[in-house]
Image (cartoon, rainbow, N blue to C red; front, side, top):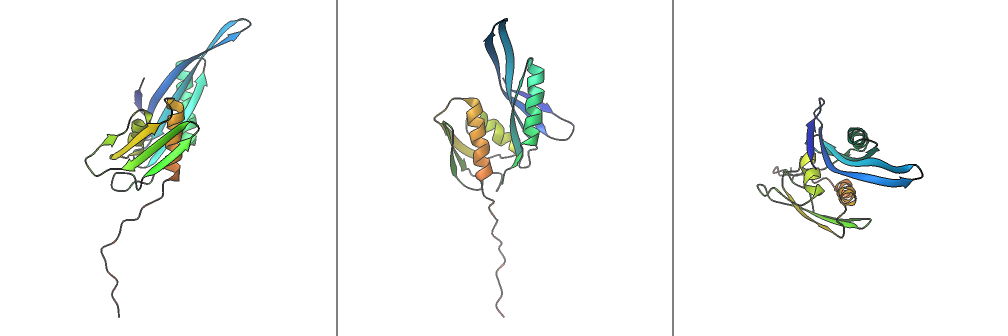
Length: 161
Protein backbone atom coordinates (compact mmCIF):
# COMPACT_ATOMS: atom_id res chain seq x y z
CA UNK A 1 0.00 0.00 0.00
CA UNK A 2 1.54 3.28 -1.08
CA UNK A 3 0.07 6.65 -0.27
CA UNK A 4 1.59 10.00 -1.11
CA UNK A 5 1.01 13.13 0.91
CA UNK A 6 2.47 16.62 0.44
CA UNK A 7 2.87 18.61 3.64
CA UNK A 8 2.98 22.37 3.99
CA UNK A 9 6.77 22.62 4.48
CA UNK A 10 7.68 20.98 1.15
CA UNK A 11 8.56 17.58 2.58
CA UNK A 12 6.97 14.67 0.73
CA UNK A 13 5.60 11.81 2.87
CA UNK A 14 4.95 8.30 1.54
CA UNK A 15 3.65 5.23 3.33
CA UNK A 16 5.76 2.26 2.27
CA UNK A 17 4.23 -0.57 4.26
CA UNK A 18 1.40 -1.15 6.75
CA UNK A 19 1.03 -4.37 8.69
CA UNK A 20 -1.52 -5.62 11.19
CA UNK A 21 0.00 -7.16 14.32
CA UNK A 22 -2.15 -9.45 16.45
CA UNK A 23 -1.09 -10.56 19.93
CA UNK A 24 -2.74 -13.08 22.23
CA UNK A 25 -3.45 -11.72 25.71
CA UNK A 26 -5.41 -13.00 28.70
CA UNK A 27 -8.39 -10.81 27.83
CA UNK A 28 -8.44 -11.88 24.17
CA UNK A 29 -6.61 -10.60 21.12
CA UNK A 30 -4.77 -7.30 21.01
CA UNK A 31 -4.56 -5.77 17.53
CA UNK A 32 -2.12 -2.98 16.65
CA UNK A 33 -0.81 -1.57 13.38
CA UNK A 34 2.74 -0.88 12.28
CA UNK A 35 3.61 1.52 9.45
CA UNK A 36 6.83 2.20 7.58
CA UNK A 37 6.96 5.78 6.27
CA UNK A 38 9.51 7.60 4.11
CA UNK A 39 9.88 11.39 4.04
CA UNK A 40 12.08 13.52 1.81
CA UNK A 41 12.42 16.93 0.20
CA UNK A 42 13.50 15.78 -3.28
CA UNK A 43 16.76 17.74 -2.94
CA UNK A 44 18.95 15.23 -1.13
CA UNK A 45 17.35 14.73 2.28
CA UNK A 46 15.48 11.54 3.15
CA UNK A 47 14.42 9.64 6.25
CA UNK A 48 12.39 6.59 7.21
CA UNK A 49 10.44 5.88 10.35
CA UNK A 50 8.54 3.00 11.88
CA UNK A 51 5.40 3.90 13.80
CA UNK A 52 3.08 1.68 15.83
CA UNK A 53 -0.38 2.42 17.13
CA UNK A 54 -3.83 1.02 17.83
CA UNK A 55 -5.16 2.55 14.59
CA UNK A 56 -3.64 3.07 11.15
CA UNK A 57 -3.65 6.93 11.09
CA UNK A 58 -2.02 7.03 14.53
CA UNK A 59 0.71 4.60 13.35
CA UNK A 60 1.31 6.67 10.19
CA UNK A 61 1.63 9.93 12.13
CA UNK A 62 4.12 8.35 14.55
CA UNK A 63 6.11 6.98 11.60
CA UNK A 64 6.21 10.44 9.98
CA UNK A 65 7.47 12.09 13.17
CA UNK A 66 10.18 9.41 13.58
CA UNK A 67 11.23 9.78 9.92
CA UNK A 68 11.47 13.59 10.15
CA UNK A 69 13.83 13.27 13.13
CA UNK A 70 16.01 10.67 11.37
CA UNK A 71 16.63 12.43 8.04
CA UNK A 72 19.99 11.91 6.32
CA UNK A 73 21.65 13.86 3.52
CA UNK A 74 22.19 12.01 0.23
CA UNK A 75 25.05 13.17 -1.99
CA UNK A 76 23.66 13.55 -5.53
CA UNK A 77 25.98 13.77 -8.57
CA UNK A 78 24.40 14.50 -12.00
CA UNK A 79 20.94 13.41 -10.75
CA UNK A 80 22.43 10.03 -9.81
CA UNK A 81 24.46 8.45 -7.05
CA UNK A 82 28.14 9.43 -6.76
CA UNK A 83 29.54 5.87 -6.70
CA UNK A 84 28.66 2.19 -6.40
CA UNK A 85 28.08 0.76 -2.93
CA UNK A 86 27.14 -2.58 -1.36
CA UNK A 87 25.82 -2.64 2.20
CA UNK A 88 24.76 -5.48 4.48
CA UNK A 89 22.23 -4.63 7.19
CA UNK A 90 21.00 -7.61 9.25
CA UNK A 91 19.90 -10.16 6.63
CA UNK A 92 19.51 -7.69 3.75
CA UNK A 93 22.22 -6.81 1.25
CA UNK A 94 21.67 -3.83 -1.03
CA UNK A 95 23.70 -2.93 -4.12
CA UNK A 96 23.28 0.60 -5.48
CA UNK A 97 24.97 1.85 -8.66
CA UNK A 98 24.95 5.19 -10.48
CA UNK A 99 23.32 5.29 -13.91
CA UNK A 100 23.66 7.62 -16.90
CA UNK A 101 21.09 10.40 -17.44
CA UNK A 102 17.78 9.20 -18.87
CA UNK A 103 17.98 5.72 -17.34
CA UNK A 104 15.50 6.23 -14.52
CA UNK A 105 15.31 4.21 -11.33
CA UNK A 106 16.01 0.54 -12.13
CA UNK A 107 15.55 -0.77 -8.60
CA UNK A 108 12.70 -2.60 -6.94
CA UNK A 109 10.69 -2.54 -3.78
CA UNK A 110 11.11 0.21 -1.22
CA UNK A 111 14.48 1.23 -2.71
CA UNK A 112 12.77 2.94 -5.67
CA UNK A 113 10.51 5.00 -3.41
CA UNK A 114 13.32 6.02 -1.05
CA UNK A 115 15.63 7.11 -3.89
CA UNK A 116 12.77 8.92 -5.65
CA UNK A 117 11.76 10.83 -2.54
CA UNK A 118 15.43 11.72 -1.93
CA UNK A 119 15.71 13.31 -5.39
CA UNK A 120 17.81 10.68 -7.19
CA UNK A 121 16.52 10.33 -10.78
CA UNK A 122 18.92 7.76 -12.29
CA UNK A 123 20.18 4.69 -10.45
CA UNK A 124 20.22 0.92 -10.67
CA UNK A 125 20.49 -1.62 -7.93
CA UNK A 126 19.63 -4.99 -6.47
CA UNK A 127 18.17 -6.21 -3.17
CA UNK A 128 19.62 -9.55 -2.04
CA UNK A 129 19.04 -11.80 0.93
CA UNK A 130 15.80 -10.44 2.37
CA UNK A 131 12.22 -9.88 1.30
CA UNK A 132 11.41 -7.93 4.46
CA UNK A 133 10.57 -4.38 3.37
CA UNK A 134 11.47 -2.84 6.73
CA UNK A 135 14.94 -4.40 6.78
CA UNK A 136 15.49 -3.46 3.12
CA UNK A 137 14.50 0.16 3.82
CA UNK A 138 16.96 0.43 6.71
CA UNK A 139 19.66 -1.15 4.53
CA UNK A 140 19.11 1.52 1.86
CA UNK A 141 19.34 4.31 4.44
CA UNK A 142 22.56 2.77 5.75
CA UNK A 143 23.95 2.70 2.20
CA UNK A 144 22.99 6.35 1.64
CA UNK A 145 24.69 7.32 4.93
CA UNK A 146 27.94 5.72 3.75
CA UNK A 147 27.96 7.51 0.38
CA UNK A 148 30.81 9.97 -0.14
CA UNK A 149 30.44 13.32 -1.91
CA UNK A 150 31.86 13.48 -5.43
CA UNK A 151 33.33 16.76 -6.65
CA UNK A 152 32.88 17.92 -10.23
CA UNK A 153 36.19 18.51 -11.98
CA UNK A 154 36.75 22.06 -13.10
CA UNK A 155 37.86 22.82 -16.66
CA UNK A 156 40.18 25.65 -15.61
CA UNK A 157 43.85 24.91 -15.89
CA UNK A 158 46.45 26.25 -13.53
CA UNK A 159 48.67 28.87 -15.19
CA UNK A 160 52.36 28.71 -14.45
CA UNK A 161 54.22 31.97 -13.94
